[in-house]
Each structure stands twice: as C-alpha cells, then as structure tokens.
Length: 175
Image (cartoon, rainbow, N blue to C red; front, side):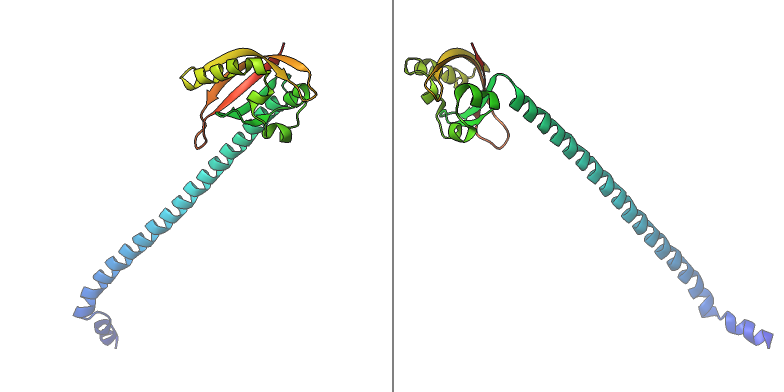
C-alpha cells in the first residue's frame, strides 16, 4: 500500500512540474515583495515631500507676516504705484501723513498729490528708473488731503515680481 502511495506521489510528469512551480512561486513572491517595498518607499517619499512643503509654507507665512508688520509699523511712508503712477499700496504712516485712507489712495495717481511745479521732477525720476537705474531719489512737495503741504524725500526703485507687471516701490521721509 505504501508503495502505491509513493508511486502516486511522484509521477515523472509531476517531478518536472514541481521545480517549475517552485521557481514560479518564488518569482511571484519576489515580484510582490518588490512591489510592496516600492509602494511603501513611494509613501515615505510622499510624506517627506508633504512635510517639507508644509514647512516651507509655514516659513513663507512667517516671513510674509514679518514684512507686513514692517510695512505697517514703519514711521516712514511706504508705497507702491504702477508705471503710470496709480497708487497700489500705502502703509499706515502714509495714511497719517497724507490724510488719505488706503481706499482713497488706491484710486489716486501719485503725481496728482505732488505740488504742480514739481510734477516734472517726479516724472523725470520715474523715467530714470525706466531707463535702467536701480533706484532714484528726489525731494518733492506734496499736498495732503486737507490741503497742507508736506515736503518728502523719496527713494524709489523699480521692482519686477514674477508674474506681475513692473511697479515702483517707494519710501518717503517727511522732512
């Protein structure tokens, strides 16, 4: 009886299939193992990228807040305007010294605030920036909202931010 079982267990055809089946099994096993390792590795990389991205976002937000505080709490007027002179930003000191709220100032052309006899000087300064100067400065007499005159020393520079049109960035000291 045992010889029948032994002969039934290992026929010549089965003895050839068994090594092929074993090789196929281990090949599939290794393939699945490599795929799983790859998935885990990709997940680890993705998690690390997400962490780094979040860290960068937090740093950018902190820097933005830092510069916003500098802009808002400066004692000097800090402003920007487009190349046509239309004001695009004004800090608290600008509101206080010139008497215009940010909303009012955003609709004004900077040249309109300059005393009529000095507008050409301002336009020449902006033209020097357009001509390639890194920065330029001038002294101008400005009209505040209530009509009183304010003499300012301006330091202007042309700025180009990615994806935005050129604009003039200025700091003005009340002298």
